[in-house]
Length: 278
Image 1: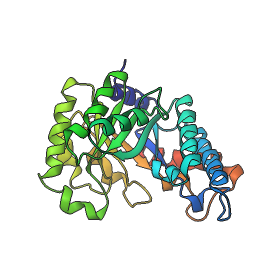
Image 2: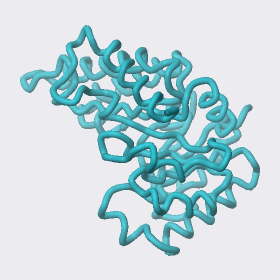
Image 3: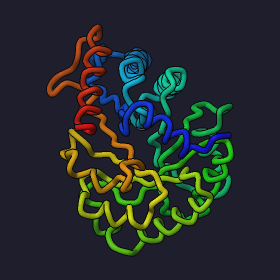
Image 4: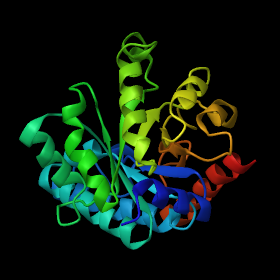
């Protein structure tokens, strides 16, 4: 089985170091109204998610569905998530499930089965994880590397309130040390999340983690630019996956007409890729 790091490297080489987050903010999803049932809303979300997949397949390396936007709709929303993930995998996209799971023992094992196992409900290629409960909370996910799966551990997130806990050599430094050790097998299948809005810190984390893939949210709508993400990449220009969600999913204001979603999202995805190449 080819390791996740190598699979991601190949996808990026074939497309671009770009990932589109599928965060279906309900008020902006075409076909969603305030008077609908959860079932009808979930169907609109599934149609929108699958249209996004169609639009970005062949343009970017991966998609990153945010599970909370689906789970808020209950079981119909979870079914919509499964449908969107299946469409993405059929389209050849890597699926990075933005779930930020983190627990211990049998609970962590259950989370790993639910998110990563191919015979489970989702079967994503990788998942985001919170490391606050320590290495044992990450162990079940680490075991899935043998099946070609990957994980992205929260290291330095871009939200302003994270600074006091994540800066310096405290918890974040310990997480970086764990990730460096986990990547000694050379596969690069254990990545980290480092926000795009942290250009001054990113080079330091890159120096500590030369093998790790960086998943880089915060580009575009959150204000980060191409100059801000240069330090997230390795010296050879690889190793980082830049994520944009709202900037690709939605127009500057309002929402796209249902018939225009594929064309409009594809245009915005291409603009994202062009900005990274420019």
